[in-house]
Image (cartoon, rainbow, N blue to C red; front, side, top):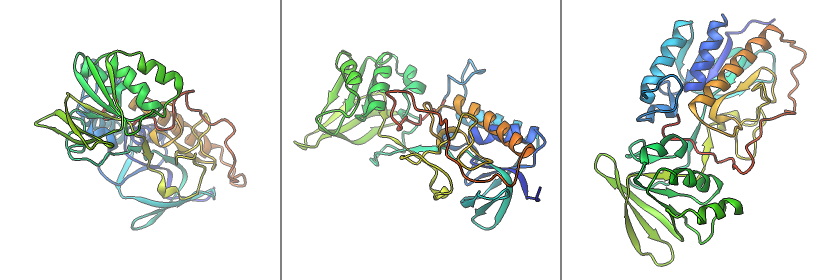
Length: 338
């Protein structure tokens, strides 16, 4: 087999990237993880996590990342702060173009994650993780018997609002139109939930507070009337964006830009795998990202062991993992992401 700089290059340094790095390095593969910022990704914004297995008392996202990083480095993972701007995975030895150099690898694991769509209003960034969230699955238990504001009108927004309403005393669902985009069966469930009030034809204007969220200003788009809601939090469900632009047609993506994989987490290009939030998946949580990464890393190991350089033709994925019925591709990336 031709020589390469690395056996495995992992793109992305969040929980998926760190886990893949630990598995690949422990398998005695020369592995480097490329992260354009500090390792951790979105999870670094997490104030507190309660639903990651093995930590019944909970922990911060930064603490979990530190533990993951220490464990991966213990097995020899190399880590580099840089950015992959493009790649050519079509040959047995794949080429990755970074900002200042080009490196080669036998296998690649894409773990670049995704980011939530933002409202772009004052207070949104300031209170992210301090009352502003994009995941009821993660953060709804913190709002037991409290008031919460939710934003959105698709399947995800309705599903998450229904889940949030199990804990919160009151949920205001803000939607910019006079009808929801969610499936009819979900709408029916929403309308029957007594502690959810829908504010039609409305958009949030500002999120305010001192240390945490205390109020959300809401404007009616037809009357221009502004109403201030006293609330303990604001959940935003207007979709997510995969960090996949750098792939630039080098492998198959779905209509929303998420990487298509088979059940072994291999993409349409042999030897290239994807794990975590960047791929087509019905759930985006730290626990699922970690599981993805383990599968992808073992897949990369097997690929390298059994690699046939003549068989490198891009292929269609026969069995991509499908999204759960009724769950749209804009499954939210949670603030706690736990």
